[in-house]
Image 1 (cartoon, one colour):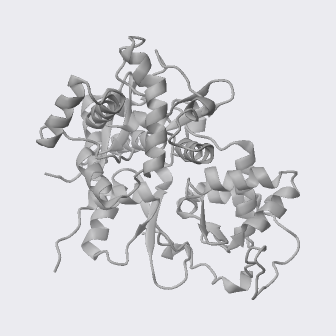
Image 2: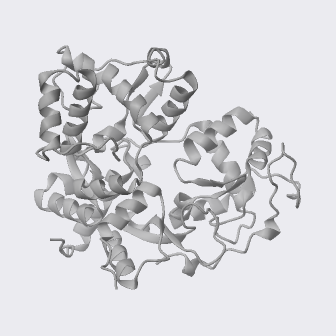
Amino acid sequence: MSAPRDPAVLLATLRAAGSLAVDDSTLAEMEAMRGRVNDTGRLLVRCAPPSTGSTRGRSRGVAFGWSPHATPSPEDNNDYPVRRLAPTSRLTWACCLGLAWPERTTTPYPGAAFTRSLVIDAAAELGLSATFVKASLDHDLIPAHLVTASGATLRLGPAAAGMPPAFVDSIRRFHEQLPRLDIPVPVSSDSSADDELEVSSTDVPPPPSEEDWEW
Amino acid sequence: MVTEARRLSDEDEGLVHDVIGALEIADGVVPEAAFPALTDPALRGEVAARLGRCGRALNRVGDGYTSGYDDRVADVLVREGTGALDPQDRSVLALVLLRCVAIPRARGASASSSWADATGIRSTSKEELEQNRAFNKKDIKLSLQRLQAAGLIRRSARAGITPGPALHRLTPRRTSALWEDLLILAAPDSAYARVLRQRRATGELPGTSGKDTT
């Protein structure tokens, strides 16, 4: 039996990468990580393992989430600086949420797969140009792990898995106002060289119940 | 030796959790005065201990604090290549730090030891960086975008390119090693550079090994 891995290293790896694959983690390692994370006011939440972006199959990953009583609220006092998304990135993020979260009663994460072209189309209806949308995806949302890209397919990223429940509940109240396209996503088995792959929402498995997503 | 977290009162647990949350998400320095768990030495010690159990370190920066990767853990991440900058981004960052911080300080513009301290630094520009023939314009542009996303540089139309707040998360050891790397880069034939290389070769001094994480 191999020696247990250092939980501090595992947690640091999780922070550096945005998520951590735990298929090979022992129960003891998971318990150690969870205890240490809980002591900081955070949680380990289930997410897609890194580098796959897909929640299909049995591969599992974890990301950092926030305990409900310890969620930071820097906007309350402005006591310390925080990074804020530029308006174009916020709009792009809203489009991603709208495309990934079709049903209000479900959780946004893992959500449905979508594509860049769908985000561009949804953002265009808000007056946002494709150039800004691509820049927002590549320079803000994907590096922040809010969105993951696997080839042409985009999904909500591990940072979205860690969205505080209160935040999700707030967005749920305005769910119908999230930008989304009115046309159904076409199912396509072929893609031309110039087109991105269109993903049907029926290809995406329904998200598991909420109790499966928080350890 | 890693010990269990000390059991605190509910109030103190809340104070510790509040400041750890702030430290982990802040885009810069968290003022000590803003959080009781930073002003109180006992609670601050507990904050440092709990961060340490997660591979993080509490760094004193001016009148406040940041969290960063613990040196021991960061060495492991570097060995594994986790979160490390790629060589091109590292080189462009070195250029930015040379132009913005190292050269002005070498000329006596500032005695500050903080990379992202605005005192005595100058900004640079994409055009200035493009004067370096080792990179083409596209590579520099892509690197600057990635460095900005990582918080290692700031860019604005008015202020130009300056070191970013993520540099505040470097521990003192890593800050020193980075400064030494830049000195070796800027003046490789100097006596100081020779001494540094000799000391690193004998293991007397840690280097950044060309990679680092924040």
